[in-house]
Length: 487
Image (tube, rainbow, N blue to C red):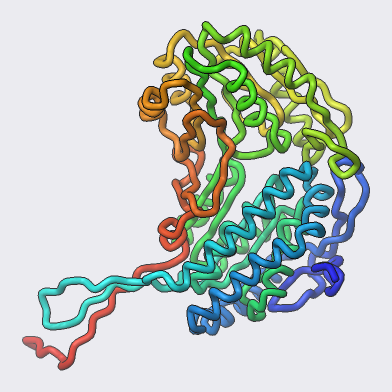
């Protein structure tokens, strides 16, 4: 029996350990490739958030009090369930998100690994003994933050939800998850079902799809102590401001306009292969997507010609109906934004070497050559299958241009001299660097995050980052006898 076959999830939300009707009614889950309805989702309201937060706070205390082995066992079972139900979950990922099967499979692999990595966190040392000038035992101990709000986006809903949910749970917190309403089955319902089946106690994880009012209610609710948000920089700024006003910690993983530097000693064919994957994988709807290709003058013409030919040869279509390289973008609003940036860039002097057209929500992989530095496709995050290519005269110029933008998420450098590549990378502020690879990479045990407008640093991935993100530090002292003070 499938994860969704055994519960009445249609038109419901997951609150306090039960699938129940949402106060906000329901809405259609739409398949972007066909426009067909896949099901109905419940829409939460701020009142639902208040109830869920109160019950989560109560459930969290009991969850945190369990032996660390009990929490670890739930996380291990969750990892197994991602694998056991891979076909069902992958099918939803392909149809609801528009992911090609390879992307859906990668998401499931990462989800399982996130749970397995998180399963080691409960057994991790949670404190240290400190020296003290007083006759006492002085300790610093890591304790759960309490209730964590996780707000995840539409583009890679499984990974970008579970990478916060799993470690937060493992470290003894309760979680309120708000997936993007457009992908709330993949990013919310299925995730909640995995942990429900894994034996997570009722109320420890709750799933509340909704709009900005639900997000604001999560951030401002007094029971919520930490907010983990993945999404656009514009929304992240508002969340950070609201969280700061209410004295909440906010971990923000935001947008990017990541650069791929092709230095003058690079292999052109290898660089073209990397560039196509970096810009066109998952229709370019990834925060790490290669948004700027800075190519040495000596290799520029061959690079543009090769990348355009590869783009023209890539099949685009419904990933549920046949083998394609690119599926649909998420909705008409996103498609129109992509096309507006492409059109405006061409009007400013860029040349469309390939693509620049669409059919419904299927946008052709697009190569823009000779892109001016002021063109929108160069200066802004496109979040679509667009590869803007700009000629550079030297590695120094490439580094200056890569560092000049407001973002600082990922960076790729292609060169035969890896030490030279590393030296160039030192001049470009980013949270992630890949020498001789493109910009889109992810592993559950690696720290992930950006700087500048790309976020507040590495708050995801790896034990150290997760402990820092989802726990608080408490100072504890113990004396055999009470001290005597002067008054």
